[in-house]
Each structure stands twice: as C-alpha cells, then as structure tokens.
Length: 154
Ligand code: RB5
Image (cartoon, rainbow, N blue to C red; front, side):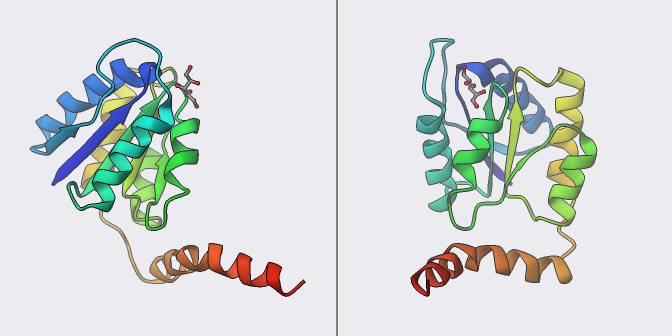
C-alpha cells in the first residue's frame, strides 16, 4: 500500500514519526511536505496530498496539523474522500470498519507518540465491514447534490 502524507508546521514532528511507523508496516510513503518548522498554511499541504489521492498516486493519505481540525475540514470537502480525525485506536478502528476512511487525520499538538503509533497500526490493518455501511457511504456521495436540489425547490 502506498500512503501520501502531508502536514503544516504544527504537524511536522508527528509527520516525521508517522513516516517511520508507515515504513515499519511495509508501506510506500509519498512525503508531500512541509519539511521545515516555518509557518505555512495547512490548506496548501492538504491540497497536495488530496491531489495525489485523486490522481491515484497513492492508495490512502495521512494529514497532520496542530489539532487535525483544519486538515479535516479540507479533506471532507472533496468528493470520495472520507477523512477521519482519530484520537485513539478505537476511533481509528471504527473509521475503517464503518466509514472506510481513506484519509487519516492526526493532531500533532494533541497526540503522544505511543498513541499515534497505535492509531496508524490499527488504521492500516483494519478492513472495511461493507454491508449496511456501504449504502451509508453511497448516501454521503449524494449529499451535496441533494442539498442543491432541495434548495432550488424553495
Ligand atoms: C497552526 O497554528 C494551526 O492552526 C494548524 O496546525 C491547525 O491546528 C489548524 O486547524
């Protein structure tokens, strides 16, 4: 599995750690920056990783910022992206089982290294359950279109 990864300055240290964790799981890693502690805008780095995912350059992506919130907002604007801001192994596991998350989001100023390691391991190894969860994911993809249609009726 090839994983794209990007962060802003608030997620840089955790991004470097996650790269090591991914390599330990035999994943190919595509590092899309940032590479220095200089302040940058997280949407610019979200865009790099989201583009790589959209183009099929990688199978899944990991986004890291200070809290994970800004990266979550970016990721979940993009059709087909199921971004999961995970705080522990349980949320990581459920994000795969029920949401088929293809984008893991982490808060570099929130997580310690051991918890981050657990999250990444579980997110990489837990399969999607499918079934009733797939039909819910199908509804998510139709949400934006449905709202535009509803609005034009008022
Ligand atoms: C950067 O200071 C910080 O705002 C960013 O990393 C992130 O936490 C935004 O949601």
